[in-house]
Length: 467
Image (cartoon, one colour):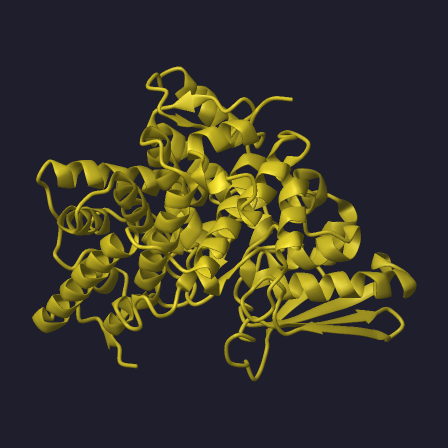
């Protein structure tokens, strides 16, 4: 595999990238019109219910509720649902904005394991907003999701940023949104290419550190980029265009990305990226999931050894020892703090949404444990898929050591969870506020009751109906 770094001005590279984008989008337009493999549509159904559950479960987060309240007064179009109790309507872009912001808040959305990228979340808010206005069936939605996921993940594989520099939500969400919404609109390839190139010229330069520090602008990137992607489609239809090589100049000249241009088209249609996705069982950054598993395993041992107050030191060997924050200021920072993930798991025995609440962040025992955690590099670091391992060594005040290790957290393609386990996760997130959601999610996944022939609007309104 060859890469080029810092060659944004090289005309041959730029021409090759432009050619690859063109071929990829031509494939996308053709692929969505053909029957897709059953296993691809089945995986798309899992991604759909997982991400829609994550969006819906965040409706009561104060910032998400306040965003909706502010927009409610000015959004009169009533084109698409906001995923809240009662399924209120808003304009397409406002619905995509709110749902996109909500979708990443709890850190329980699906992601792609082949590159830093949450392709499903980047596609879904804009796609589903467009799907409502065009009365698209679930069958059509799943096909567009699978194809747009492919395009989005290939973008993430093509441009690789230095570690812990650019956040993928900022880099790739507008590209996924323009592709998903454009395919939902049924636009021809030349307009999709123009829209993607426009979106690629407007990507926000969001840093990964924003998540670690708890800067809530990070939680805006998916929602705002959904709007950018949809606006790019409108602009393309009006005759605007962008760089012929889309995001390449910005990614390479400004953001120091390496480009692997062959990733745009290699094995196109022969392997499906959506089958390489992961589902989260922990409400935190995926990089911390192996640490969460190791800490949950150690929690029982710690209680048997005398409890948290007898802990002298906690050594966590990880692939990202620089992702450190012993004093997270809010729930976002806590979800990206190895120290907090470990401390919460050891103290309350959970890494669900409640583990990242203000109450747990401020809990004296959790704070005590956070301050005992020391991050160290895991060496030698194994190859993928065990490239995000964690080893936890807890030393007690009497010298005893508790040692646990997780090489790869459950949920990824190498360690998949069952559809039933995912549906249990979905039910746990939604049943209290949306009693109809779990049964409809099951019907989507299992293909029951002619579900795929129903429109997405009909389905989502029933899922979000008030008790």
